[in-house]
Structure formats: structure tokens, C-alpha cells
Length: 233
Image (cartoon, rainbow, N blue to C red; front, side, top):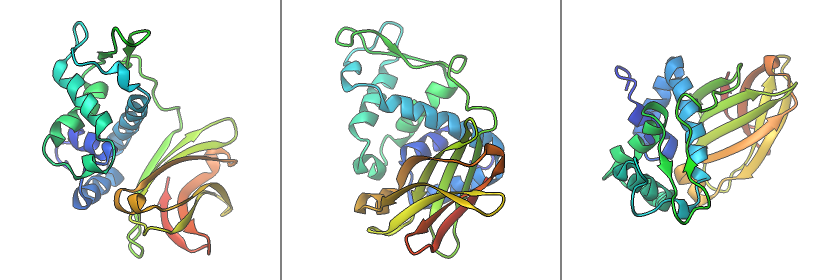
């Protein structure tokens, strides 16, 4: 990946289909590669859009001008979005390519007949880009082993945050903070790590009342205020 900036690896990373060693390799590369961090933001946006596609929109036959292999792959993604996909190695390249193809290879249509209207995921030319000023970061804490990738999007005097956190033990009670330049912190969310979260990680969205230009980091702490992982942005 370091040499080729492989979009399939990024696609598999977004889907949570890599093993721990591969995740670390991807995150190490992301930390030093602004281009791949920007591509990751686009892949996450597409993955979120795919999550909104209703199951009945994915039919057995391809739409006119569609790609049958891609359509079947997307159906597989939806049916295996849980832990089975993360443990599945056969066909991983197809699953990752399904996401990468949306961003890099043009849009495709899904849903005819049973869906009320044809649903078309946006092509790169029409897909909304992250807002200007969006910042990305990823880090692994050397003491706790926890890993986090974050996206901070500016709003009107405040910020939206998306965080993917892994490497925290089940039953840990966690809080997500946005850190300002003056050292103050605003809580953006909290959660209890489940058994699935310990194995596969947790993804959550939040917001904080800190001016976009004042944000310097996003961090996770436990309810005893012990730091678990910090990501500078």
C-alpha cells in the first residue's frame, strides 16, 4: 500500500474486513499520506450511502447497463456486514473493490421494479466533497494499544466528528472529546464497549461546540478521566 496507495485496501479498511496487522499497516500509511486520508473520507461517505440502500433495492438481475458482478458483491456486503464479513477472507478483493469502484470507477444504478424509484449512487463528478476545512487524523496509543481514525467537519461555529475506535476492552465506558487550542475539552459522545466492539471496533458520530479553527485533537478517555487514545488533527 505504501508504494501503490491501493484503493482496495482502503475499501476493505472502511468495511472493517482487514485483520489487525493489516489495519495497523493501513493506519500507519494514512498517518503519512494526505492523499489517502482524503480518499478515505470519500470512501466513508460512500459506505454510509450504501448503508442507506434498502435490501429490496438490490435485485437478482442487473439493471440496464449495470454490472452484475458489482451488484452481487454489494448484496453480499449488505448480508455480511456483521462479524462474518470481518472474518471472511475469500472474496475480500471483490468486497473492497465494490466500495472503491463507486469512488474511483463511476456510479452504478441499483433498484428496479420493486423499488419505487431507481436509486443511483452518485458518480465522482456529483458526489459531494467533504466540506472545506475538513480534517482527518489517525493514531495508535503506544501505552493502551487503542487505535482511532477521526474526521472533523466544520459547521457554523462548531464541529461534527466521526470516530472509528478499536483496541479497547469490552465493558469499558468511554467518552469522546474534542480538544481546543486553549486546552479545554468538549464532550462529543460516550459509549459502552460491547463484545463486538472489542473485536471489531466502534464507529460513532458526535459534535462539539468548539470553533473549527480552534480544534487541535480528538481523544477518548474513560469515566475516570484516564486518556485512552489521542489523535491530533
